[in-house]
Every structure is written in structure tokens, then in C-alpha cells.
Image 1 (spheres, rainbow over the protein chains, first blue to last red):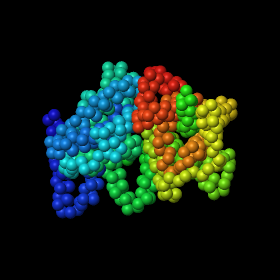
Image 2: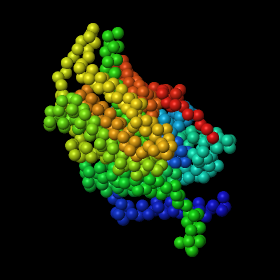
Image 3: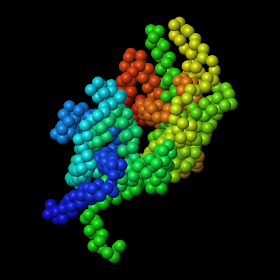
Image 4: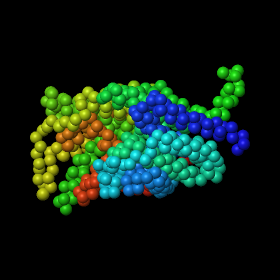
Length: 318
Length: 292
């Protein structure tokens, strides 16, 4: 604990400095509404993709149903804050969404993770997400296929910023804990992990539930910030676009996920000037990046202050 | 009884199109373990190709079908050569993302070139409805079912009886061993893509005739359903993919006919999950035991 105090404090300083940097840039006018919107979208994507990276990159299980859990969070916030439109209502809805998503993920996870793996698991999670979406599409309380609008805006960029920091902290600490090592052991070799006494199903489901909970947080933020949601926002294309962020950044690298979310967010904003050609360019960029950098932008490299310190300690290696 | 038979006829026509698509998915997956997300868009290309040759040059059904199949086969081979071959040794998930990229490219490229509006498919032949004991069956439904069945039989013969089919089976079991005994792995994979894409192209023209409507995004949902069908049947297995396609078609039609059409997708996925829980490798899939 004491040995790490230096790094904990440094990260804290970096986070607070980042907050005030953005704040200052908004005051000066460098960040206008347009860029602020882009930053919030990037932040929400970071929460989504880091959660999915825990499932795909660290526990090695292939999930294609992330958007379904995002939908649960989004609808929880939309429904609750329309009745209680206060900050407290938002916090309650956030927690309700997280709990619901965790519960459903637990049920889906225990049912599927014991029996299925690989692409079969991917299809089962895809199916679960589509079932969630289909039910939302047909309920009265969720506004059916038209969706919900005029959701009170109870979160702004500081909320998103704080939650990005919090989820990343929780995820990183989880990955580096004893349980996190168990999850990575399952990814590397399931049989060997089992032989070492790790309950493989339990930890696979745990990663899945944690990932689903973060997706619900992102969904709540999305609903509250964008103020309009409909079931078509949470289809398979949304799951795939989250997957693209994870793979582009590098499966198993949280730093890569951050980088990819930023790169794709900026690319998307820049390409808005191209109109109809936008998605064509996006698709070609995606194919080219994958052909020339199949392991993603950063592979499984992780940024850490500790290694940075060591790096500068050994000057001769440059 | 009549209603049941009528629904079965409808289910079989829809199911045979899903089955044609599922076969391509299954073969490609069997040989390079890739979920080819662009497969649904090849089917869209086939439909558009048929649309143009029929409305511009007034081709008849057989020639239009063959043209659509050849163009789709070429598209499949080109996509494999440029997008998937450079990634042969990469992690599978990278190839998957490339496939998603190709799918985006085809969908949006096509929307950019021809516009994203739905257009009506030209009539290749006059629709005639036959009434057999109260069951209405149109010549188009018979044509769809017959074409699909003939293509499935041809495919089965190609895989089981020809030299190339043997090579395909060898590569899907063990690419390295196949290469050692003199099989050209790259040619075999190209051939598989050609075969699978040709079937998707055929599915495209058939769906155009069935629904009378095509648009650049038409491949998305059937593509995913066909993949579900392939998984249901046991991915990599040809009879499994056909059976899976028919099953999905039957399920969908059944829930539509009992008034649950709003929930039909949910039911299809629910049945899928349940079947997978009991048969984790699909209906015809081989359940391999894990070995240390």
C-alpha cells in the first residue's frame, strides 16, 4: 500500500488536472458545445468499451450483447427521471439500472457460460440482447418502438468525466487484484486454471456481470445527456461498434480502449463534413487499420506510471 | 388443417432462402473459422445484380439467376483476396472486425452509389396462384423452393464427390495437414468463398422475387438470422445449415401466424439459446471433448 501511494497520488493529481484542464478550455471557449458533445460521447464510449474489454480481453469470452445491457441502464434512467427529475432521481435510476443489468447478466451468464464458448457464446449473448430489445420494443412503459423523449438532462460533462474515472479505477483495480489474475488465468488456459482450483465459470460470469453493470452506467449517461432514446439505438450495430473500439485499441489493453475511443470519436466528428461518404471512409479506414495492425493500435500494452518511472530511470535504453 | 399446411408452405419458402444464406456462412466458418459478416451484403449484391440485368436487359429467370450467382461469387473471391487473406495468421477477432468493415463498406458504398431508397423488384414472370385443396401456392413459391433444393443438392454433391470438395473438407479439418498432402489451401478457400457467395447471390434474387422489394440494407437482418440458423444446425455442417434455415423460417412464420409477430424475433432467439444449452454445438455439430 505504502509503496503504491506515490502512484495513487499521481493518478489522482492527473485526474483532477484533467478536469480543470477541460473546465478551463470551456471557459476560454476552445471547447464549444460541438466539441463538448464529442467529448461526452467519447466518455460514454470509454465506459462501454472498457467494460466489454474486461469480458473479451481479460476473461477471453466473446460477448456480442453489450448494447442490451446499455439499453437497460438507459431505460431505467429514462423512466425514473421522468417521474423524479432531480439529481437524486438520476442517482437512484443509475443504481437501479446497474442492479437490473447485473441481475439479468447473472441469469444469462450462469445459463450460458457453463455450457457454451467461443462463437456459440457470442450468438447466445447476441440473442439475449435482442430479446431485451424486443421486450422493450413491445412494452407500454418504455414507449414502444417510438422510444422516449424529453428525458430531463440531469448529467453534464463533469458527471461523465467522474464516472469514466470511477469505472476505470474500479476495473483496473479489479484486473490487478487476485480475482483479476484468476480471470486472466481462465483466458490463458481454462483447463490449467481449473486444475489450479479456480472456479472458471464463476469468474467468467463475474467478468460478464461487471461488464454489464458498466454498460448500464453508460446507458444511463446516454439517456440523460442525449435526452432521446429508442430501441433501435441499442441493436446489434451498437454492440458491434463497441466491439470495434475494443479490438481497434487492442484486446486486453485498457489504454488502447481509451485511445481507440478518442480516435474513433474524433474521426466520426471530422467525417461529418463528408456527408454520405462518411460511412464509406469509416469502413475503409477500419479495414485498412485491421489489415496493417491486426493486434489493434496498442496490442496488449498498458500505460502505467510505474513503468514510465522505470523507463526514465534507465536512460541508456532510451 | 388447411391453415397449418398453408403456413408450412409459406414457412418453407422463407426458410429455403435462410437456408441458402446459412450454407455460405457455414462453409466459410467451417474452413477458416470466420463469422463472415459481409455474407448478408453479398446477398444484397446478388439481388441488385439481378435487378439490373432484369430491368435493363430483360434477362429471363435462369440467366438472371446465373448472372447474380457469378457476380456474387466474384465479389466473394475479391473480398476474400483483399480483406481476409492478408489476415490469415492474425487473431480471429481482427478478421471478424475486418468482416464487419467489409459489411459496412458494401452497405454504405451501395447506398452511396444507387441511393438508399427501397426499389421494387421487376417481375421476372407472371405470378400464378394454384389452389390445391384450399391451399394457395404460387408458382414463385414453387420456384424458390425448387431452386433452393436443387442448389443444396448440387452443393452436397460438390462437397462429397468432387476433388475440390474433398480438398475443402480436408482444409476444414486441418489446413496444415492438407497443405502437406498437396492441397492448395488458398485456392480451396477462394473456391469456398465463391461457392458460398454464389448461393447467397441466388438467395438475393429469390428474396427479390418473394418480397418484390430490395434496398442496400436488406442484407443486415437476414444475414444475422442466417448465421443464427447456421449455428442452430451446427456450424460447419451442410445439412445442419439447411435444417437450421428451415427451422428459423418455420418458427418465424408460426409465431407470426398465431398473432405474436411483435415478439417473433425474441422467440427465435429464445429458442436458439435453449437449443444451444442442450446441444452446445448445434443440432448436427460435433461436440468435441476438451483434452489436455
